[in-house]
Length: 294
View (tube, rainbow, N blue to C red):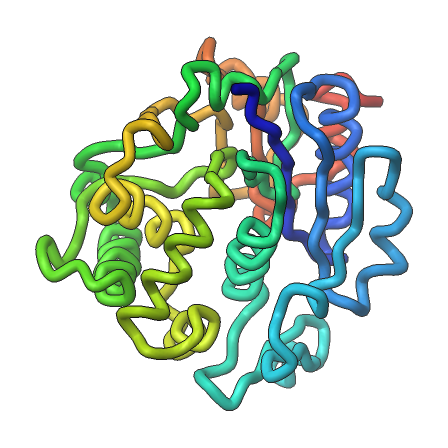
């Protein structure tokens, strides 16, 4: 049976030009999907509607998140950034809410395969999303013994995310999984996300969203990965893959043209995309020229 795939991206106005690059690269180089859904805050809808098209929809987070979780100007940044407030937990930053959006939309889609790609990613090579389900089971990213090899503070941070994921899923042992599940171009199953949400609700006695917002220690990738590996255990649904399809520059100084060229030469044969983390401040115009979209 051929599985249908949708692509989802969570973004915000500060990443708009990078998200535009993502969309252009997808339109030229990506196939095998029914649609691309970009999720943004309500205040960013008018800006992002410029990117809508025959296979691209802009989704207001108000259609995904509960009414008790709302964005407000962040006083610490003098209103330049947003913060999400809820009576059910601590204030949340944008990167927390992006995770909630992904989980909410994945559960709502009719397509079986949900491919998540960050808005600061650009596709460099032709890529058919059928790669994710060419054997019938969906490839999901899982790298054994990954957390122990991370430098601090990433090792402690991801360990805390894994611990909390296990608690929410009712996994008693191991308390912390050492597997790595975090990547910027990954596939989930919508039916598995729905099953995972039901599991969280059965363990906590609350809605899955209420459970997740109670603490800021959260990784949706680790939550999903631990559910697949330690709870679901359905080889007919999932096949583990340790291949990272996206070559990432996570942090450091802004890249100039020469540094971008050096970075591109580090692409592995199986990698079809590259991501330059937006916080590095690398000029999107330089990225556009480097990836042949100018």
